Image (cartoon, rainbow, N blue to C red; front, top):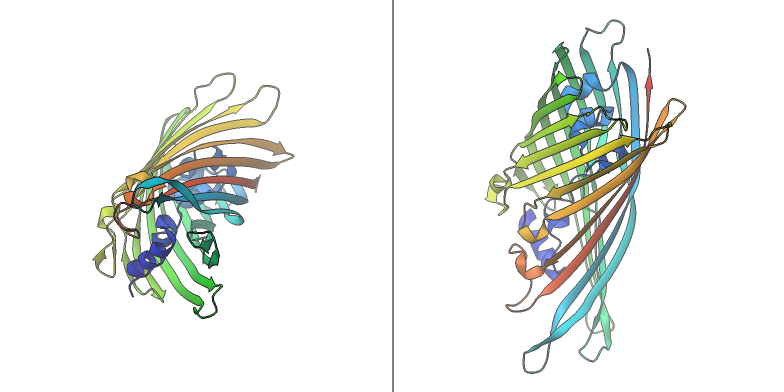
Length: 397
């Protein structure tokens, strides 16, 4: 069975898990600062940001800069199904399942080096590991008859985190211009388990498991321009050189390039504000697995954020928002709001950030998951809350 066919068959049994089954949940936040400012990692002036934007490696700071992050992902999902009377008329909605989860995840760890004795002037290097996509999902429900007698239970578990080893190098031929190149190797093992346990011992229980490995090699190129001390603009592209699944799902992936652009403005007010904005675009309508069209649509994201430094040496306050256009269906588009704080602790910088993203969609609106008969429906209400901490330090050499 192909990857797409197997995942859609699994999703059809449970009401549909578009991102988790097809592509994994994208966009793990890498630093609390970038998360709090609309998850704007492309313009993040840290070693972690230099992994996504290789032209920023030289601007992460003179000396050795270190950064690490980790957090928690809290998810809630409620599913309701249309209920009909004996004449086939709809009489309302009944709760189908209600699931909550709290999972710890690694953001990443990175280091950058610039201005070291013996290094060419204007050269910056960065390397590290960061979490990219996640396949974590847990779902279960009790199966009951029309008279609410317990018949059994069903449970689905999907696990796996796609981590990427990255390296970047940038060079500034002019103070107002930086050029950068980077590469990354992403790997992931996704495990899926489907269980059905029945009260009636004459009905056999079901236990199905699958395990697949994903590998992607990516190259990146970017440039950053600084026309003035208060304005910075950057643009770049990342393109997969090779990608594919192996194991129970087996075949090559053909993924289009990802284009990104960002803008930073420092107005120079008494709050020492910093405004950032980012945009990304990927022509996912051209994505293929094992030579077959995956039936996706072009996706893009836009984010904006602001950071204010309070007078008197208080913490830095950050706010932002983000909009993501889903490659699967319009009803899966989502808006996120973000906020966070930054603290200076004797040479160390401690950042805390949070994200809240609600989403409601109808099963019948996702054409790639035709799991119900015509006229039936299943409404899905989701909320995701992400809490992230990151610690960084710059060491002069």
